[in-house]
Image 1 (cartoon, helix red, strand yellow):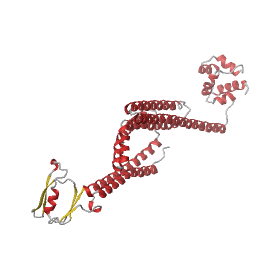
Image 2 (image 1 turned 180 degrees about the horizontal axis):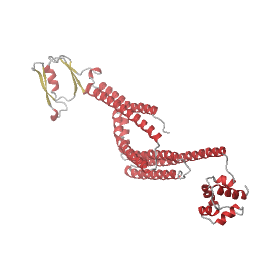
Image 3 (image 1 turned 135 degrees about the horizontal axis):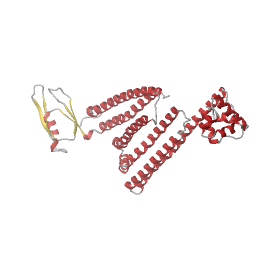
Image 4 (image 1 turned 90 degrees about the vertical axis):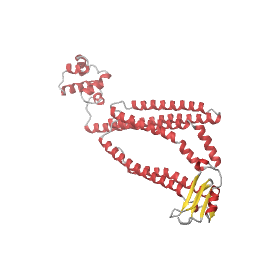
Amino acid sequence: MEPKTIGSFIAALRKAQGLTQKELAEKLDVSDKSVSRWERDEGLPDLSLIPVIAEVFDVTCDELLRGERKSAEDRNISSAKGEKQLQRILLSGTNRFQNRSYIAMGIYILGLIVVLIAAFGYGKAQIGFLIGCAFYLAGIICQVIFKNQAFMCVADTDFCQQDVWRYRERVIRFTQCSVGLSIFLATFSLPLTDILTTLIGRIYAQDLWALLLFIARKLIYPLAAVGVWYLIYQLRYKSMIINGTIQITPERDTVRIENKQAKRKCTKWLLVAMAATLAVQILLNLFLPVSLFEEPSKTFDDYESFAGFMERDIDTNPEKIRTKTLKDRDGNILCQYERKNFSVKQIRYEGTTDKYLPISVYTTGNMQIYNASLRIINICMLFLYPMETAVTAFCYLKKRKEEP
């Protein structure tokens, strides 16, 4: 475009707003002679003044350089293209941040590998843990740096504010997951030598039930640490909403309230299901009759033989010896003995309360099938808890609404 087109366009815009050359010069912090030269096509404004002039006359830099206004259709097309470009920038920033976050997660995994090598390759578990913590800390520092860089990508005011808030929220949530992983691995690495040594021992001993209980017990501390981190994150997230780093529109707030209600409802049903499963497991462990699985070790048709068997001194602990009495409905003593035979695990009275005979006794020696069956039941119950959790999570995801 010819230089004079820009000058004539500035003159037309100035006259349309009713400004004198001196008034325009004051707005631009230049002399009125400079404005006069522009309009006479004897010179061009400095490049740094182009955005300022465009803002004064409410035109785009492109229109100012072209020397004419765009049509409404052209402006709509340009606006749509600009919006798509901004969306691509946000998407690119999100992908770049996630890829960098995977680097931080790789540092965490590398720290865990160092702990394993130091503990089992060189027998230096404590030194390995300290080195691993250095890797975990380095990963967290990298993650924070990546988060700050991601925030800098949306510092431009051209972005839609709601898009910026959603972008920041995605970055913060991803950072939360990354740091939570490092906390889990660091807490898990603390007793790592004892954990793996015991695991190997239990596997060779083929003690599956004890192995599962051991794993569950050892995972309590890492999961507790992650839970504490989640609570800290929630407090930090609320503070970000208060200081304006993240804002939630009324539409999003309505959807979030509905999602919270759905989450609470699903959580309530999950707790009820888990409580019922735990109650059934406890009842089965306490009251499951041995007679369903085993034949009795001894069956007595008289009280004297039964009392003599129960008073045998087998693995006797004097503090646990108790005097037991069998009475009929009228309170008459039918049998009295001191229980010293602690190999007896269950007693089954086949008769009525007036006559307990015959009496079946089950000892540790003949309860192998019963104990194995009880372990299978407990293992099935143990797998039932994560299944209930998975079903509840699936139901919540089906009910959950996408935030606008």
